[in-house]
Image (cartoon, rainbow, N blue to C red; front, side, top):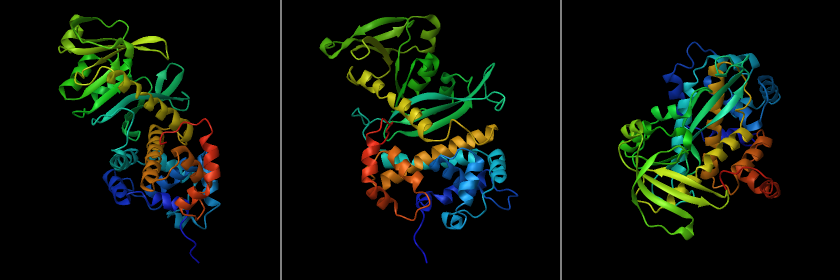
Length: 388
């Protein structure tokens, strides 16, 4: 007797499987593969993310304990530790990177009208990176320091919905500013980043592409005032100036003028100086925009707290990148489901409900409605919530 679909199956139903198979065919992911397809690998790793499994052996034990329903969950092969390890080692990680981008495209369409704190029609992005520490003896390819290994996850976050639109995974020693070389600027978009990304040649390339930026000025920033705009000091503003660069090489790299806004931050009890190429917005909007950059810090803390990207199931570069991209896919997929089902709960709470009910045959909407008491308790926990 059919009792309905498992929660895992309901979640995976939101995947665009035709697009997934196109990614597999593009990178020949199943060349000479007789069993355990790329989809089985994705399902296994997604299961591990949703249920917080600690190891490949843990994944195998949990799935084999429910082997009588694995077929109905979408699995077409028996999940074995060695088979999954070999798949993570050898299946091209670009399959899952490209599929994640497809999911990101769907998510951005769903969240494109969401507010983020500043009323603007422009798309606003926050750019930053997070370092994931690794053991040098196990991950010798991820060079960071002499006695330490790490990878960096460089992320461009769309603040409308907190959806990562661009991710690049590099060795830990790669400096953040180098990512501006491979970033394709979107005309009319606003990019928020910290001092680590200040390179005037790269900023001028953004400017010439029709994009805008807001960043903090470095303490040794040399400038010449061209014009001072009137301000209201009661608002906390100290100056709003049009400036040009003084240093010879800097002025060659960025020959155009910049906007310099200084504002006193009462919370931190210090004055902050912002640089931007946006001249059409009110002066107070510049620091308000930069303040929204905290969302990418929250995003990094959230995924490290709720997804398996700090410990890995394999040690090769391919295995690490595959796991990170599948984790991002799961994050975006859950965000898509939350939006499409209009679930009135934080993403953290939704993940917790999924993790303990993954083998149940209860509709997702019913699980959420039945968990009112659990939800109210979870909301009181000091957790990072991205989709309030």
